[in-house]
Length: 80
Image (cartoon, rainbow, N blue to C red; front, side):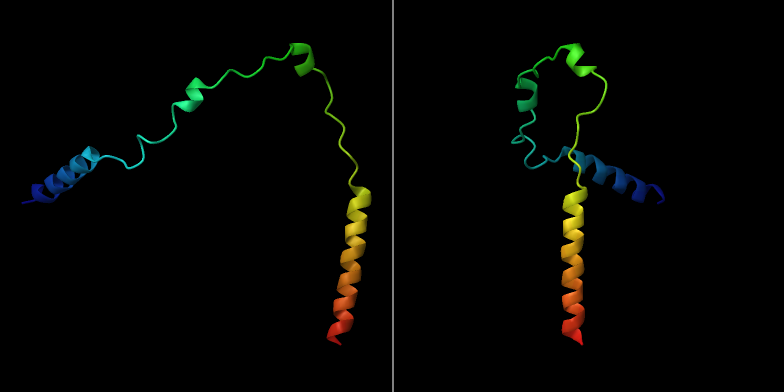
């Protein structure tokens, strides 16, 4: 009698493996295989030292901070 639950679990697992997964055949898994290869770049362009320059966000952050402080002050006075 101890083998009945084991056999039932094994049968359920086996039958679950026989089911079709909805949407699997409709997936677009084959499109990446057919995609064009990426453009190749010269190694000199890839291996150049240094990162590209990024703009300094200090002025924008200071302006946002000032606007938020002014809004906070207005809200503080409105609650009084």
